[in-house]
Amino acid sequence: MNKICAFCGHRLVLDGEVKSHLNTEIEKLAERGFTEFYSGGMGEFDKMCENVVRKYKRKNNEIKLILVLPYMTVAVNRYGDEYKRLYDEIIIPDLGDIHYKRAITERNKWIAEHVDTVITYIRRDYGGAWNMYRYAKKIGTEIIEI
Image (cartoon, helix red, strand yellow):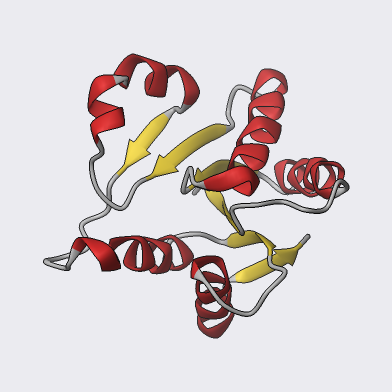
């Protein structure tokens, strides 16, 4: 069974040491047998995490980077080939019949429920990243704080 890690952090990254910490944590996870990494694809933190995972993919072809979207986007339809180059897979979970404004929140909950570990970059106690962090903690998902 694959071990799965997800990323959860604020859009803006203000700490210059984050990438160094990510390298260390993702390397440790790869050594622990983690092979799938879920990204929501939103903001600097997710992009930073994705780039670190891509680096490890070059060393270990079992590692997969998976984009988890709350819904289909125009960009994915229009630039599908680019997305296929960047990600091994794109998942759009069935979130039921919800208003699109709740879709990101519900997608974040879905991610927290379907992974073994979440790497977080949380610097304030509000917003989508904070809510996902709290939810993951509440349901007992392992959390690695950067």
